[in-house]
Image 1 (spheres, rainbow, N blue to C red):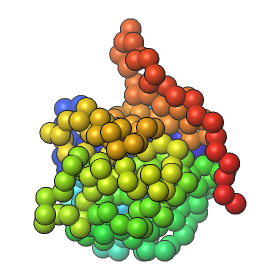
Image 2: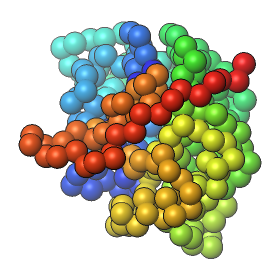
Image 3: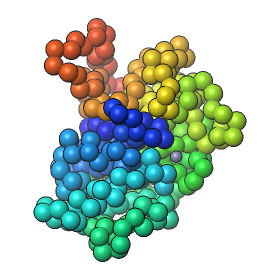
Length: 278
Ligand SMILES: [Zn+2]
């Protein structure tokens, strides 16, 4: 299973980073998770709109689902005319996005399925389990498994034991960390810090932790330095272009670089594959 980060900017996109958006590919199946603001143009750098086989959405905040609209427009109105797109999301979470267009424009291009806490579905060769995690609105974390590869993704949520269970022994723990040191008091039950994610990973022991949804004006360097100071060694930031082949952790896990740009020493770590729980 291969993960490609399309964007990981929290709340709003920047000139160089889309909001949450992740492409998961395994064999001939392509799954798009959380088409947030500005994810669609980045998706088109990876594949055609019609190449997406299914969409998973953690929750209805627009930085996680707004670009479902242009994806559906391209599929319905473009010349390609791919099959109807299965979309999985918490009940009622996409109403506002779908209301952007008349029913005939986008809804005929999708088959909307409701997901809830504890649900388990299969998309081609990929099994997906949904886990409810605390956020301002209903939010589902996803655990994707295929051929022994495991990807755990939180969506947005507060610090809780369920996040640790979601991430336990995963190859990649794609973890929302909106803040570095502290979540403002009112949001504390619903969002996490880098420090909290480091503690979760110390218990769940994923191979690699990928920090995502960092506030756009926060310092990436400070976030990474804090994670490492908290004992998180195998950590990355969810930058556009970051690709991780879960079957070959660490071998191809760097963001795309400009021609001639040097890869820093020590940036690539080849990790032995751990024995798996059965
Ligand atoms: Zn959110």
